[in-house]
Image (cartoon, one colour):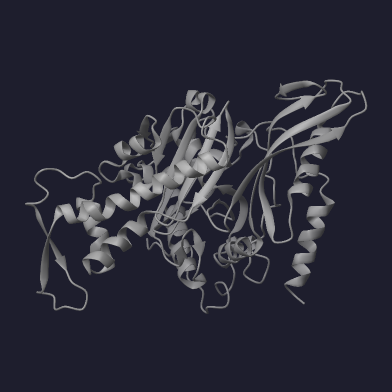
Length: 456
């Protein structure tokens, strides 16, 4: 069956497929997906997740879709997988709606055909809108009575309200820990008596306009957005073992257009950051400095790329077609030249990671371990280079914990997609049984105002 058979391309650039379809309920009538309530994720118990669910990893160099379900024993099984070369995306941000839509439709269609199901909503990664990560404390008066679920919801809502700005929307507002009066480090304060409840919150937000563009693109594909999840956090969920989350580990997700960072400690996500540098920058360096087409530069990087030179590299000559020359005009360059172009860019990447950790004060909390993942982490010698610059032991992280994951999707390049599956199934958050979207008039009012603005 054709990859596009389940999600046919629209008949015109301005609208969705003629005649609608089962997936049409995912958009609001003008080709824009309904965004999930900002700053929250629906509460889930792993055992209560019914039916297949889908996730979508939108990256600069690839777009991947996984459809999975929760088995009776609580494990996760992949039912469908789709993959397309990245199109219409630059630096994690959608820059061409039509090209991105075609790639997403084809990718989701592949996964739907394999899983023999049709998605109405999907969990999407966040790598656009210059995401920012902040930690802060919020207090809520209790007055000596026992704390109940409404108090926890209110203190989180209060923190979300204080953190919100007009041009940014909150994607995650995650309670890390609570304090009841002078007692700190409380994981679940319900039933405890106190005068003041204090919540330690981790807030991640992104620019509103970038999120609207993302919602528009997903809506044009006849899908609703179930949740938006930080890409580095998702990569950490799929690659870290429990001890690494507890003892302190930095995840570095080396993608095509961006490099994500996530700091885990004491079982919690403490910080995320996104650097505007990735594998495509290495490719561009090769193309520019060797005067070769971008496609061939990517091939050189994949087949011969490394950050460490060997004694034979000077004698190993690689064929390099030149831009604008006839096909038979092939230059010969030593492999050393390729290594000398790649290494400075990756050194710059890890130096930026180290500076970012120092600047935000997470150098100590980040622990004594680094996990590299993402497609760009597979270049030869990257692990050793990272260990030298960051002065920490480094290992390569691959997705784990998913049954039925195809071999082609089991490498570091698909860590974010696998982590999105884990998040959609209920991993990575505390107080699963609380709905933090209850009693949010301010956020709902903002969404109504934005809805009306779009139509006036």
